[in-house]
Amino acid sequence: MGHGSRKEVKKLLKGGGLTVDGTIVKDGKVQVNPEEDIIEIYGERVEYKPYIYFMMNKPKGVISATEDIAERTVVDLLHTDDAIYEPFPVGRLDKDTTGFMLLTNDGKLAHQLTSPKKKVDKMYRVHIEKVLSAEEEGLLQNGVTLEDGYVTKPAKLEYIDDKNRTVVHLTITEGKFHQVKRMFLAVDNKVVALKRERIGPIDLDPTLLPGEYRELTEEEVELLRNSK
Image (cartoon, rainbow, N blue to C red; front, top):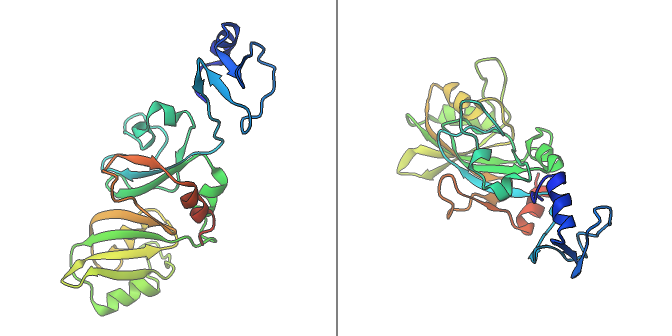
């Protein structure tokens, strides 16, 4: 849980810094039940979590990766106490795309949310260069052919404000490389700004500023596990 290397923890044990249910334990071979036993290091409770789930409002200029030599990553934005869980981004958002980025160390859930077979919705707020025609709306909703010949799965297109028809919500169930941008390019339009606002049934917390994140509640995690 990030309290030190094996060598450091052995030293901590030897110095009597760890207690289990109030009793000092110096032998590292002693077995404990992290769900029932009260484990403390110098009086501070240690809670064991096998999995962690973070909702981040990804800012512009940050890439969806765990590490990079030249670029700042979403993992670089985590506090040290959270980074020790070694979470990774679920799916990816382009460097200039903002919004809901889920980070976790739960590989099973990550696979479920990104697998095309599961058809988990991802909703984006899309600012486009010009107003769509009825024909172009139909192509996006029914499946549009990208420049490489791939035909996208049906999408949901909604106008956020009828007075400003260059801002739309686009909901898709797949995540090809630069997909949203390529879908609008396929109908001779250009994405000016892009923000992911929802994954499955979970909306991005509106109180999170760009670069901020919070842990998902147990209820939110369960909703994601049951999302289709």
